[in-house]
Image 1 (cartoon, rainbow, N blue to C red):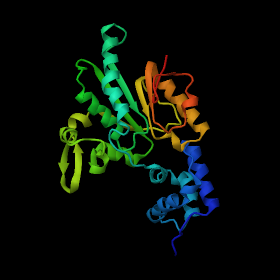
Image 2 (image 1 turned 45 degrees about the horizontal axis):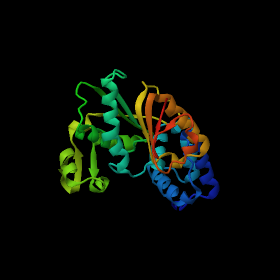
Image 3 (image 1 turned 120 degrees about the vertical axis):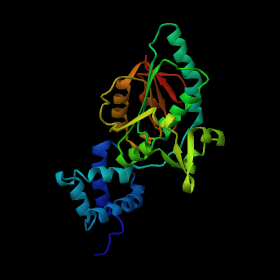
Image 4 (image 1 turned 60 degrees about the vertical axis):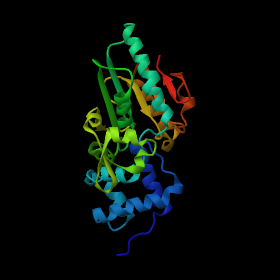
Length: 275
């Protein structure tokens, strides 16, 4: 049987509606070829004869096991360590100094909780862990929790493995790479256990509340650009609910949410604080 070449516009709309209802991501019609190519790989894996049969599978109870594979195929995106370096400079210097000052003034306990939302393959939370490891100030005696979440099981598997190609380190100099990675064959780099053990990963859909203790700092960057305004509003509601009083929300430069953060105090171009 001849393999289908591309989704029809009608088929694309069906998949578009389904994934929007499931996780809030609005697939752009200009991505029809990309989406077709990614779904086509799943046809072979599931032995579905065409796109319509595959749609029937993933939207049925019988397709529950295939649904995570479908989500992975559609949502996986490439990222890299220390993406937008100024964000990490703020965290490593200004923010950590602020934490120590508040602790010295008796305004907070020595606990720090950080959430990297939609962390993909782990580069962002591991970058935060590196900042803590490199900081000139000491958080000795503090309890520090870094949580990375993503809806993609395959991305989380990559994060837990801690293996990366050199292109993921485009913002890192050689000294930093040597400090935090060991080089494996074929130019693969393994993150050192001292950094890897600082981060816990788990699956989470941003459209649903995060059932966890409040976080002092939440990072949500380069993700909401794929959501429409209704979905963005729901995600922001969930994030703000998970943010501790006085906590910071760190956002990306192209999320399209700046007019939706009126409940937070703007502290910078990428930084908002919950009062």
